[in-house]
Image (spheres, one colour):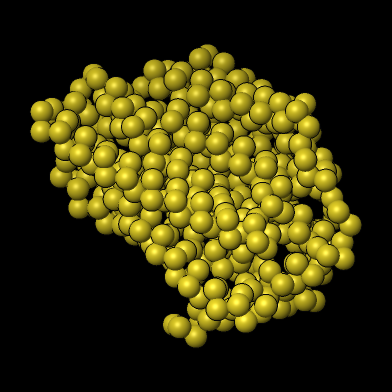
Length: 444
């Protein structure tokens, strides 16, 4: 195990050295964002999020608890696919292309080929499912999985267009998908059910993705000729994508646990509040992603040392906020039967209170991870390790507590995982400083 870790670290270090060498020889690219560009990006992505929020608010009363619960359970089951496709590849390109403009294009071409395969395969699979006569839960699950693949592909394609100098495609694709969603909401009000809604989303996403792909470089696998470089890029994608993939997988696991217990009736309202809350968090992550190329350049070399120190401080503050949250939760739980509130008409208020009160610590954690992953290659090992620990701890707490006390323990599960992750992050960053100090001394 230690040999594998050493090989991984040496590969990532070599990738950093390769990128640094390329950046020296490559022409300087200006990644500064104009205000008008930033406003258009925010408006496009904001319109899409508003359409999603509108769907969450409107579809629940239109479809009822039972039908909406099936759709919500399918969405939470496959949500992790979105960051699997988007997060790692996009963050890798946003980090490496500004540092290495000459070695970035082969990565973009390989990703383009993968996305062409996905936008053909997933709608085709969904179509076959419908042709075989599936019209209920199975079809909804297959369709939602195709929608998740389409969403992840759209976000990755938008990022590729931004980093290659065409940010307007990001805004236009978001506006187009907003229009699709609004039209489907109107059709749902006229009687369209969950399956029809999913069919419309798959069709709209496929069309938008096809247009985005036609304006990117032709697919190519020339990166295979440089096997060592390709292997290091893949490892970087895995580590940089780990935090968001594990975050969404945690949500999927916890919702699956609730759906399989006697508390399954809580899924619909909890999901609705979760969608509203995650919209704000997603907007923060998107804004950070927009500025990732500039952050990558600023955190290159000595700037990374400052970034890692700030990340460690942010993790400490997140840990403090989490401890305060536990104290407050214990006080409230001692005076209020939260399990009873979760199944009452006031459940929305409970879920909103839990989500809102957890926001400060989560924001601090996101910022800490952002600074780490955009510094040197070793730091992606920290964020990757923290992500896996978060998933395991949250799943373990949820598997024990949720069947006994219901969905209120989703927040506690996430908090426990967050605290363990913060401790690991602080320890690994400190350990990395102790290792790096002698190396920098000898280099001088």
